[in-house]
Length: 142
Image (cartoon, rainbow, N blue to C red):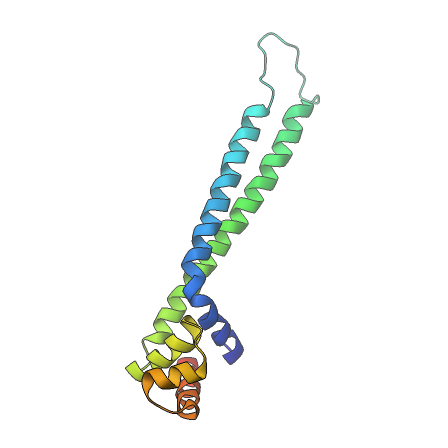
């Protein structure tokens, strides 16, 4: 993992649960639509002539939509799993930090605070806070 990727993960970490919830809602909506489309396909009537080489046009269209919905649902599922994996990675990396380093990372990345606010909160100068952040990022990369 590069430093740039780690910083991106740290910025996104506070919103990962919200993104997962949004994806779950979108996935459920697609599944509901797929169920509606599944009901649209025309029923097979008993006693009607049907040959293997003749296709029902409604069935063909609905099957096409169902396949597209299935692909989209699988993509959303994979995205949700990736977000979950990212959250696990960040939690594991944060366990490597000291309390002081964790506090600086928390204020800067998770709460989005400015350096002057962070320095006043932890009672160190801004330069020292930046150094602690840099040290923490490099420690997580090891």
